[in-house]
Length: 346
Image (spheres, helix red, strand yellow):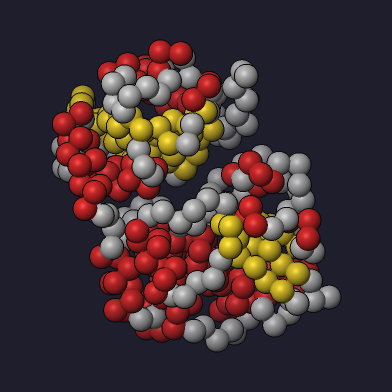
């Protein structure tokens, strides 16, 4: 608690002169809940606080969260970071936001492994913690802040989502935060958000995933061609990793000119986040935790025969390519700290 109060004092010192604060997020539950918490801390100290997302909110659960919790956000393309006195990132780092390359970011609060050399005035990056929502709760608790029902609900959902219902990367802070927040939260809102996951039109993608799935040595690999949202890749990967005969899952698809690969793992002896980095950096960028990871590769950086054509018609080639890259990523050769990815050739 003493350390948390010290960190909180350092953070609040940045709000001393009533600055205008911009909070940037990727619109997922943990980042949106964390932004709500930081806004709660800054609201009476800053002259203006705006939460902005870097991409549209597409996943149905995330839309339900925004609607039911009445979260106000704007698109980052509707404003300029330089118009604000302070720019903050929660549940991410400057390297995760290409639009911020070369621009100033004063505040970074995150639970992902450290990426790049962000020059922040205040940073709190704790990769051992399962959710950034837990870190923000730590600050609220240290400051004795009153937490509304909607904020408690959001933080609970952020923790629940990023720890996959407390089945991966759980830290004692996650357990403590959730246990204290849950009595303050709205259980029915939590359930209402959780029940909304896919639309009827997305069911065909599940059928395609099962038809195209290959399983070798407890590893399931699927390529789905062009997809309407990368969130669907996440939903399918999360579903398949619960199959008892499957230990590792890779689900890939093309979206917005990039090949996205979602990794899931149940083997505690393997770190899928390091595997993703070792296998796919370069030509892309990758990262994550022991049980979950993600990689994104610009289409122009892929071998020509793998670039997107009709949905799924090069599935076999991409699966073979992913198998080869993963097989070449030897666990024994992993460094303690992954090197920064080198950009792909233009």
